[in-house]
Length: 529
Image (cartoon, rainbow, N blue to C red):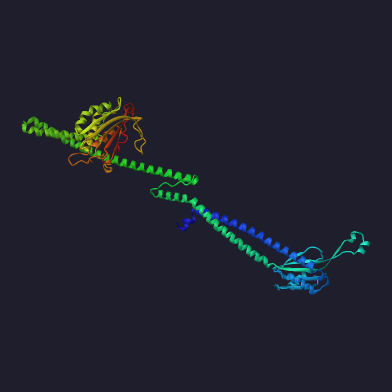
């Protein structure tokens, strides 16, 4: 798949949407997490600063009162040992700096100068720790309070409200913490959350890709099948892997593909039928012309032979040859009659007749055609089987089929002629016409050599024969085909190599065919194999 097709694919669009959603969720989650963790770190730092300032204020009050710098230094060194403490400053009650110690200088003015300004602006307050944010530092200023309780002698002369302890501010202490710890902690938090978000994106992307691949795999196969179908290639059934919309889409595609394949087969069958009809029409036109001219030639030969017989005394030695000429003329006229029948120039004389009676009447003649080596048996249905047909033409159909069956059984066999009444139905996938509600079926089956597929596809073609030259005209089955079409019936064939042949002729019954046969159109019911 090319890069452009991949970017336009449905799976990539879903993956991109879910990826952006995961990224947005990760950013929001990381932002909130960083905010709350930063606030918690800052609160802890402020809490530690207030605690240190309070401890220093309480522990150094005596030395502040006495302004003892040596003891203040001793007291301050314990606080300066803390990791985050960068400076400790002590002021007296007049806000004058009496002790200062810092680990490192700060940008611009020193911490001492900034602290003096801050403390100078303070108002005396016996309680509370003031927090002041500076450049990279947090300053915690706590008052140093000295409690004064009245003595026993004073309590005698003072009433109870005045006997309370008094507090006075004797100085201030300032503890300066390094705020860079916040930045270091923030970097650690950001790095930790970035790694967490990256892992979340990675595993979420892998999970989404797996889910999308599983979901879009049927769509990919369906798309490939649609593309193959559009190119006219053979398409196999798309597997149905679920019962959701994609599964129903695959089911509908399989149904559509089967219907298209069926219609394509019907189209090919109709095209083959049209080509066959056009070929038969062309051959019929040729046969009509040949039959017309040949009939004129035979009429001249017959008339000339008649004149010769009347005007000349034919010796007995030549009568045999004259009879052969008459026989040949009769055979030629039979051939012409077949050509005329095949080309449909001779209209069938359709009359009500019993098909069973017709077969029984033709039995002696058929027995003579097939000979003693072939067993002829009849299987007729009960009662009359009335059809509208031309008796002479149906006898010719039986003769031609029996003659072909005899030739297919040179070593003998069995020929079965059967009749039955059968419900009719569509005879061609591309043609929904039926003969009638019920029809008569004449079946001629033999146990002969059968036919291969190539021979089967050409047996109704005029002048096509598998016999040796001079032993067949190739018009027998073509004539059968034409006769069945004139009777508005159809002929079906079942055969195979070395499995015998079965011809099934479907003819309309007389009560249902009268109105249909009175029409002037020439529509037929098939006649193809």
